[in-house]
Amino acid sequence: MPDTTRSGSNKPEHIEEEGTQEEIPECLSSLLQGNASLKDQDESEIIFSVPGVSGQPAKVVNLIDLKNLAKSCEDMALAHEIAVNEEFKLMQNEDSGDSIARTVRDTMHRAYWDVVQVQLNAEPPCYDMAMDVLSNIKQAFGVLLTGNNDRALEKINSYLDEQLIRRHAEEGVLDLAHVAHFVIDMMARACCMDRDAEVEQLKNITDTVQLLRGILEVLGHMKVDMANFVLTMTRKEFAARSIDYEKKKFAEIQHVCNDNFPITIEWLRRHKPSEEETTGADSSTEGTSSNIAEAAHFSAKPKTSIPEHIIAAYVELLHPTSNTDDFPELLNLDRRRFEQLKAEVMRVIICDSILCYAGTCVAKSDQLPLFRQNLAHKLMILIKDCVDNQQFVEVAENLWLQVKDSMHAYHSQNELPMPDPTSMTLLKTHIENTCHKKSHVFAVMHNRSIELFKGTLQNDIESAPFFSSFREYQTELAAILKTVKRITNHNYAVYGDYYTKLIRDNMN
Image (tube, rainbow, N blue to C red; front, side, top):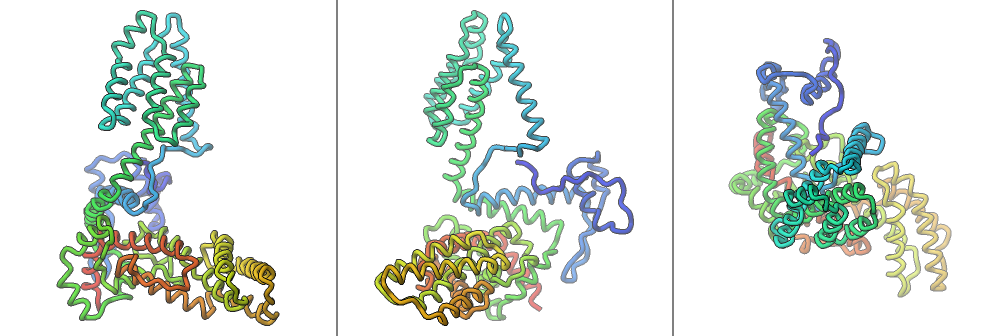
C-alpha cells in the first residue's frame, strides 16, 4: 500500500538551537523515509524524549521505536478503514496526470511495449518479451479463477503452456492474435458485468501489441474487482478480526506513548460517571470489548453495553458547538467521519426546523403532506454542500426564497389565501435565526436528535425512539444513525477497557 502518512520533506542540512522543536518532525520524517543511511546500531543510539502526562515521567525512546510506531499507525489505519467504512474499495494505483511518478511510469511502459513491438517485427520474429506477457496473463487467470472454476483454469493453463507456445514459435506457426482472442473469450466468461464493455472493446483492436497491452490492463481491473468482491463477502469477519488486530497495534503505540493522550483524557473527564456507575462498571469490565465486537459485527440486531457516560461522550462529538480542534486522539481515525456526520446532522436539523416553521404558516389542506415532502427535498438540495457555520448562514436567503416560492405554488394550486405580510416577515426571521442556530425550534430539534443518538447507542436501531417531527428526513437520519452506531461500537470494542482504565486513573 502507498505510504500516505509521512511527510515528503527533504532532510534539513542542520538544526539550529532556536526553533529546534519545529524542525525535529521534518528531520525525523526524513530519517524514517530512508533519506539517510543508518545502521540499526546507529538508530538505537538516536533517542527522543516523549513528555509524560498526569504525573507520569517522560519516556525516552530511540529511532527504531519511532519507526515501528509509524508502521503500526499505518497498518492500524488501513485495517480500521476497511472495517468501519462500508464503502471502502480497493483501487488500482493511479498517479495524477501531471505527477513525476505518472510521467516516469508511462515512459517505462511505452519503452517496454516498444521493445515487444521491435522483437515481433524482427526477421525472424523474437517472442521472448511476448512470452513474458503471456506468462503474466496466465498468472492473472490463476488469481481470478483459483477455487472458482478449476476446469476453465485448467483449459487456460494448457492453452498458454510455455513449452507448447515456444514449440509453435520455433515451428513458425505461432499466431499471437489467435491466442489473444482465446484469452479475450475466457475473460468475457470470468469478468463481472461492469467489465463487459471493456472486454468487448478489446475485440476491435487489430494491432497485436496493443491488444496484448489492453488485455493486461483489463485483467488488472478484473483482479481489483475480484479483491473487492472477496472483501465484501468477508467484511463482517474482517471487521471482527480487525478489533483484535487494532488492539495489538495500539499496544505497540502505547509502548512508546504510555498514556500520553491528554485530549482523550479530558474528553472522558467531562463525562466521568458517578461513583455508583464506576463501581458497577468495574465489576463488568472483563469481556466488554469482545462482547461488543461480537454484537457489532455478527448479530442481526446488535445490543451493546456501552456505559451511559461513554455514550454521552460520543454524542458530544456530534454537537454543533463541539470543538473539532480538540478531538480525542483515540478517535482520530474516525475524525473525518465524525465531522461529516456532524455536518449531516446539522443539515437535517436546520431543514426540519425550517419545515416546522413553514408548516405553521401555510393553510391546511389534503395536499399539505405532499407540500412538506416536496419542500423538504428542495431544502436539502440547497443545503447539501454546507459543512460549516458560515456556509449555513450564507445559504439562509436561498432557503427563504425556496420556502416562499413553494408556499406561493401550494396556495395557488389549492386556491388558498397566502399568509399576511407580517407572518411572512416573521417566517423569514425564523429561517435566518435557524441558520444561525439561534431559533427555539432549532434548539428543540437538536435536543431531540441528541436523544435519538443516545437511544440508538443504548438499544437496537429499530427500537430507538424516533420523533415524528423528523418523518420527512427519516431516510437521511437512519443512514446517519447506522454510521454512528457502527463507528462507536467499533471504537469502544477496541478501546473500551482502556477508557475504563483512564477514567479510573483520572477521576479526580
